[in-house]
Length: 225
Picture 1: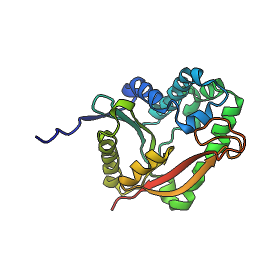
Picture 2 (picture 1 turned 180 degrees about the vertical axis):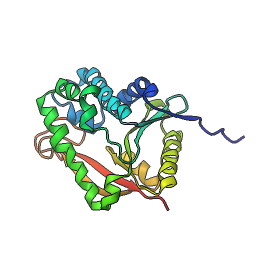
Picture 3 (picture 1 turned 45 degrees about the vertical axis):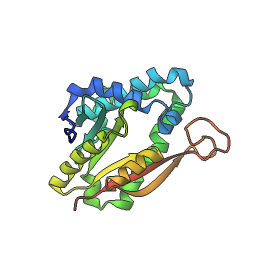
C-alpha cells in the first residue's frame, strides 16, 4: 500500500509560536547558532536561542513571511516573498530584533551584523540586479530530530519551489551543515558560494577553538525551469 502524502499547511503569524519552538529544538547545537552564542555556556543556550529566534521570526511575520509546516510541525520553514525582508528597519524594533541581539552579548551582535551579513554579498555573484531585489528566500527551515529522513523536508521544498516557479523567480537559501547542503542539492539547488565564519578562532561545530577552521555556510539557489 502506498503511503499517503504528508499534509502541509501555510499561514502567517498564527504559526509563529509553534514554529519558534520547533526551530529552537532543531537548531540547538547547529554550528552557525553555536558560533553566534559562543558567549553562553552550552547548557544555557536554549533559552537564549528561543528569544533570538522569537525576535527573528516575529520580524518575518511582520513582513508578510509565509510559515509552512508538514505533518503536524514535523518540519517547518519560513519563506519570505519577493521584495519582503526580515531586516526591514521599520519592523526590527517592534519585532524585538534589536533587543534580542543585545541579550546574546556584544560579541554576538558583532558576529550577527558584520560577519554573517557578508553572506549577502553572494547575491551579487549569482543574481542579476532585478533578482537581487525580488527573489524568494527561505529564511529558515528545520525538521525535528525524530522526523528526519521521512521526506518531510522534500515536501516543503517542493511547495516552496512551486511558489517560485509560479512567478519565475529564483529561490535562495543558506545551508549551515554539510547534511543540509546535500539535502538541498538533492532537490535541485546549486551552491553559489561559501562563507567561513570565525576562521582561526572557531571549530567546525561553532565552539571556540584556537586555530580552528571556522563554521561554513553555503549560499544556494534554485531556478525554475
